[in-house]
Length: 452
Image 1 (tube, rainbow, N blue to C red):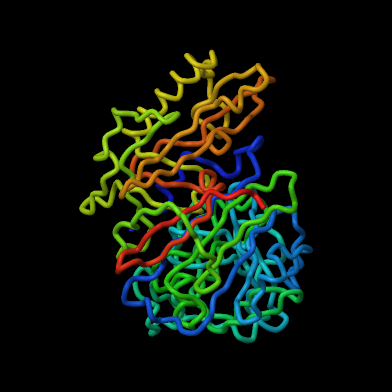
Image 2: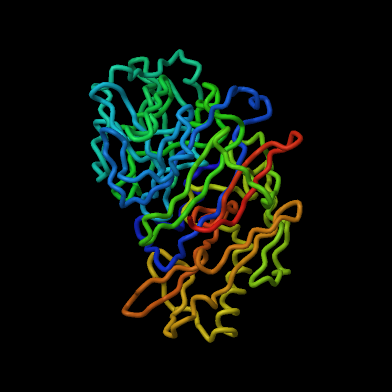
């Protein structure tokens, strides 16, 4: 298993400043279960999680966020429909109720495709960090239960602890969290759309969360990978989801009417005329795709060799994954260096813009700009994927504007990585994505859609 901390080291949620991004979405369809689990869910069950802006005020008692973002005609009372909220662009979070009785509160949990376990901060938790809503108090939740050391779940990477409790440690981009495995009641939806409750879901109750980059909003992370301990897998076992899920990420800006979604099972919409590429290494817990080349402004960068993106199973390095928990795309160093040089040359020769000779906080590659109207002339890139699929990322999701030392800069939103390539959340905000099984093969589908 790849240590998630290696995927995010060069990009800090806390220091980044996002601006001048267009309001649009890119939706994907993904397959989450292995072939052996394709028939685990039955009936016409699915669930959706609307994506809402972080400025929407969350009622931590009812789960209401002040605005129904999915059309009313789209609401099926048989479906589980919890809410998803961006929590400091480009972090996306899902709104769920945790606990029962007086202990129940609705929280925002960051979406995570890498970590194996959903976890939240529990009372007491150190160090103290700001978050939306109270810290979860297990003592007030009648249905809360520790996972015993003899449980099926208490096996590596989880370990037995004193007092017959099973402990966990989870290191992701959000935090290094430590605590105990537990089960409790999870609630989805609100008083407007109707509550759906699922008992006995496994999660981590964290009593320590170091370097907690939560923007003062989220209280933990929701795992959506293919491990049996993930949120998606557990709901699949209970018949609430099939082997596919779809999501649309978005950037709100000043437009409060825009929204995206995270949908599972039979709630997944049709993706006609979608681009498609196979998911690789489908037995692994992460979502691998086959990246074979990169173009800048529709011109192939011939020095980038497909072998640069090859996964080496022996060293657990290389390959390309899709992850909404990674804020900005990271590219394996050998390919990134070539792309960076091409971007520098393009802006210099075509636009007369030079690279800043100093470091702008939170960025690696920045350019000083003074002229108006330059943004629409910034380059786009195309990722060439297995089976001839192409994913084009426009300038508005590749560059961000920043003020530094009184000067305006545009900074590149792709970063180098020493271990692998990760398609991050910022570059997925204009697609509709779906994963599904076709003839025994898992596939990643996507559509570019307008921000409606």
